[in-house]
Image (cartoon, rainbow, N blue to C red; front, side):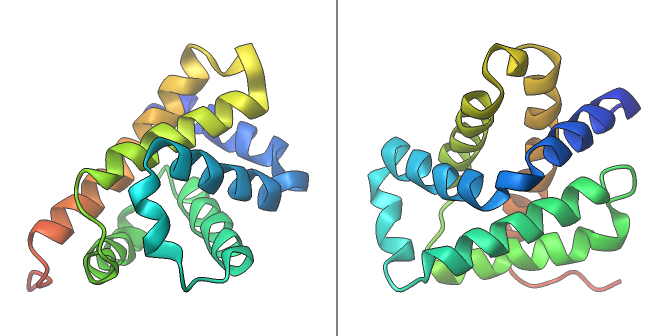
Length: 142
C-alpha cells in the first residue's frame, strides 16, 4: 500500500470511531445478505461480542498498515483458526464485498475512487495472508 492509501484508510476509520459497533453490525448484515450460507458460522456467537472483536481487529490492522510485519503472524493464525470455524476460501470474497459495501453505505459517493481502492488494497493484503495460512495450516518454521 502507498502512504496515501494508508492515510486514507486511517482517516476514514477514525471518522467512523463514534459508530464502530453499529458499522460492524451493518457489516454482518451485509455479509449475510451477500452470502446467507455464512449465517450458520455465527449461530452460536454473541454477535455484539463478535462486532467488538471485528472492530478491534480492524483497528489493529489499520494502525499497523505501514508495518504489518509485527502483526502478520497473528493474521496468519487467524486464517488458520478460521478453518476450524468452517470458513472456506470463497468466503473471503463475500467478506470483502460486505466490507466495501458497508463502507460505501457509511461514506456515500466519497467512498468511490481512491478511498475504495485503498480499503480494497488493505483487505487484499490481510485476506491474502489469511488465505495463504489457511492453505498451509501448519505454521512455517522460522
